[in-house]
Length: 159
Image (tube, rainbow, N blue to C red; front, side):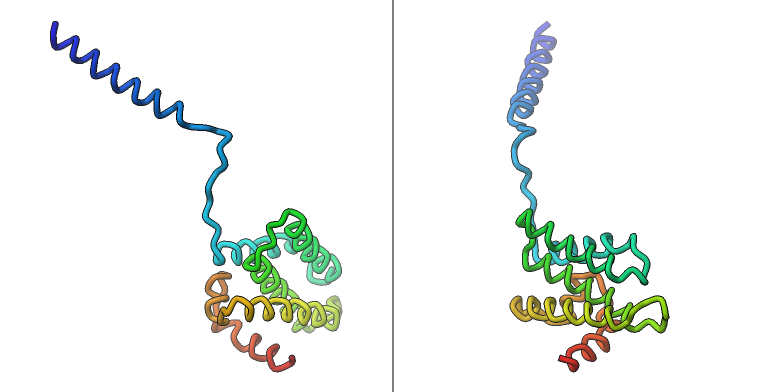
């Protein structure tokens, strides 16, 4: 009988400790999430990439508008961190730069080059303010530095 009494006491203590823990949980409490420069760069890259996916290459105006809309929406929500803007403009430059190099009658490469130049200037300014080198930026953006290095150097010389 003493053994049953001790068993009930142990079960009661275990049950109360779980109940006390469950009462501490507040589903309306703010969630804490660590935001890093790297995660913001990645968010900018992926947001621009996803926003432009639905438009074919020859719809440059639509692609450009989608990019600018992403930037404006993040500004309105006050989520336009320097890291986000760096990643977004870096991705926008890559997309427009790639279109500017196409040999196609469907793509107005002059418009693409103009947009690429605008995004290049923006991302380089932010990159300089943050003191980040090209290799680190490419790494944080999930891009191969060696693949982009010639284009970065070429566009840097144009400025």
